[in-house]
Length: 171
Image 1 (tube, one colour):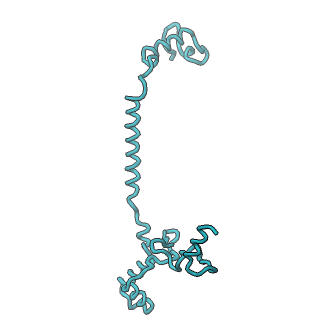
Image 2 (cartoon, one colour):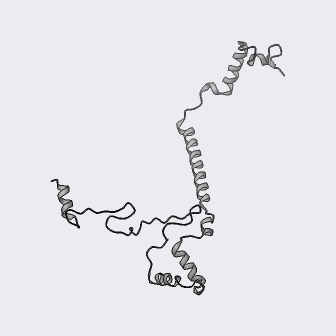
Image 3 (cartoon, helix red, strand yellow):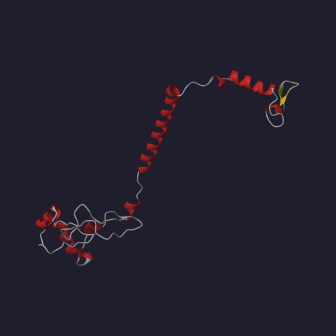
């Protein structure tokens, strides 16, 4: 017999021949759910949760639940609201209320745009090499003159748009 098997037999509460039976929805040692974990989930598309919002009631809330079983005309407005809050976390008006999350998202987007701009500027100043000599205006003019002197692509290219007699661009 392995160590694990012997240890599990030693710790077992129900004796040697009994196995603990529990469903996936409950805990292994009891019928109640663990307090921090509940199935409460309410939203606009699914407004009626399977469980009430408050599972553990204090004495005042239990007295209110007992009073609920009687006539609802005897309940005050505040008591009806308190009963609603025991069952549901938010009203539809509270669920539909606009949030200010868009301000945070927009601020983060602009922050990252700014950071990216600073990063690109820093790379141009300190990382990228200087422009090659062939990209200066003087060299570009010399390259264009060379293409025109060689009459490169005289049918549709630059040479077709240059007037060789007047030494200027055709209009």
